Image 1 (cartoon, rainbow, N blue to C red):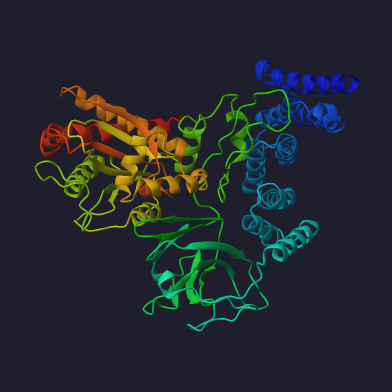
Image 2 (image 1 turned 135 degrees about the vertical axis):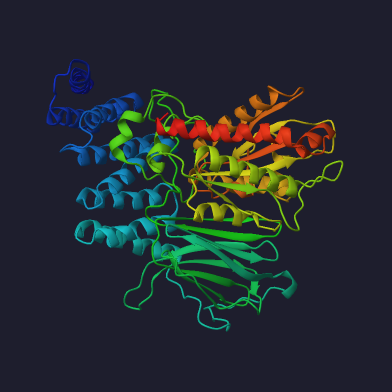
Length: 607
């Protein structure tokens, strides 16, 4: 009881000081706020009973938040941020709620970004490695985080020594220290050779494709059928003059004779890619890395291909973390169990703004209240470049209407109109992923948007249905599908089956935190409402099918807010006729352009 009283008194003192500072203008000193928070933390850490009560943890956390709010760049800021990360980590050890450890990661990463030379940042970097190793179960990511301790904080001897110890532990447990692909096509001999798979069962690696800008690099591996793959990250080996390497083992697989052994890239992130037959059944792809802040790997189907994205230290690819509310009065594990967590996806947050923006409200994927402020910080003065993607093209005709209107022709026509209006009315730079009737793989469209450094990405499509009576306008952003119809539309636009879409749902959660989900939902909402409002004012029988979410290949891996619009059903006679005409298209595209203008204005205002 005495411990509880001491904690209550300490918290009351901290919060009263903060209230006095903000409400009456009285200048509570940073030191007094910080010391009050420290006393409350010591009381909490000294009493196991208090540690079992979730609201007591948040009471202490709010004491430190009061310091950040009153003195965002003060003498105690670094120590305050580290303490917040430690508190959330301590809470996670009790609760096992993924949102708690994600908050911890956010504070540690924010400290490192805001104070990159601080010795406390070295401690935070080490803690990130420990979190991925001990609590997230991701040895590859843990190794990368621990390696950053040695690379970025060589003077912090204790942290470097501990990081090396943990890296050695990882290497021994996972077999990371393995032989690389050698020059040439010869088969390397492993300690134990396994019999070769039947030739007809092997996948064939037919080539590599690559896109890049200074902060982003995408490599796509073309394969004739689905194949299993594993990825590993190897540290730089100065003694052997070898760079850091990311490699994938694909099996059972073989390399086509036409595939070069080496692909020079030299984009500042990846210096080269190498492909070779590691053993009779395994092909190894190695990316020699010059710089890496993050990476993600995923596969797409029909045809099967593996996509590797490498982001630099300062890339915009990370999204704000999604946090759970502070509901519940216990720090014990939730009966619901652990939610799926992203594999290589943690936010790079500026901690100077953190305490003032986090609110005690639930956050959903499309309604994150921090999204506007986050986007405004990333884009500076707002949107400056928009990439418009005309769906389909070339050999891919898309849907075909009742009178023969082809989706690929319609989308190119509308994309050109939208682009011209954005240029002339909004004075923004616009890039089309294609400006002629050519085929582009879906992953190349996203890669072009990323390499252009676009601020918005809009993919334009027309819908189709076996029932000619079905009509309406709908807009999508990337997420897990919420209904069967959304899955059907995504499967059609992805040129795959709904079974493959179900498989994609299983892996998509690994990519979600890398995507601008909240911001994409906000953009999609504005665009959709604007289109529907415009056409309803001049046309009858307009059906609003709403803003939806589904796993579209073309949106996966986009580093900016991105949406896909379905402008109508060309399988419906009325909508096909309207979309063929100029007047309806003019009104529809006006809706898109006005939504972008309003969205941009909202960003500039920070709301």
